[in-house]
Image (cartoon, rainbow, N blue to C red):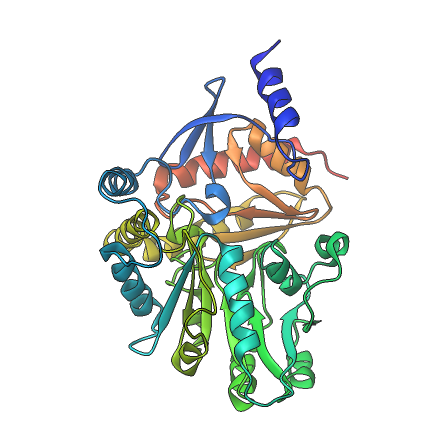
Length: 398
């Protein structure tokens, strides 16, 4: 039995059938690279789906895990710790939530959005606020509340009925204006729809959403799980639109590979949760928060937010300059990039990239998602250009 057959069979025999078949068994990583069990090297331009902000085995990450795990890894939520307090204060600062802001810690993006769902239900300014709005083709997670917010019926159908009260609207300003009134408690949005293939909301959408939600005392909750922690060229994507939300959810890149999620509230939204209304055994534990502090501190001190903006422009320009019949458009901000394809060949392009030693992702049938570590440099960009061109050339034209 070959090594590949052995691990593939073990996966099929032991992992839940909800999981797709893995492309490879990875054994180690370093910087922007990973290696499989045969020793083949891959340039990782997916970063664990926008998670590994500092790449693999970064010294700041390793030192934080090692030091904190040898000091204090977990306490119950009957206690607090210095890393937890430091991270809460850091998140208030980088989000701009300020003195009135409050932070809730969970263990994932889905948990952060579950907390946001509860926050929406708590907005009772008016007894008839029974509606929560989200948009079509959005993704907010796979737990039941987060799934109810997700605007992808194919993901929800097997689990109906969903928690009640959520309505999905088109991503248009006209739909916003028709839908938002005093019966709505919250509007939850991704500034850029990552799972839809890195698709931005229409121009002016977020600004108008902020105007209408403020007018009707509706919570504007932004899901920055994929766009946050510097990935789009600012700490959070909402900064680039000149707005301030009532709450923002985050996870992925803030932990750099260690599971953590958070909900940060602003202003009056910070008064909605009261004692006993929500909690988590592991959320905010000293190990997770120490690692997140180290990751965010390194992003800040190393100028990686600026690097994301500059390298993103460079990578998008490279893709646009590739003479390929398969590329229709390039979308995104910073190091969250979507390549729109002319035909539904994303799986073939992703597979060809893997063969060429490049990890990217087929976000849907006609979109490739690219999300490298924020540490990406000249050598990685040059190698990406070479291998992505090879992948496109390997897929036959229609």
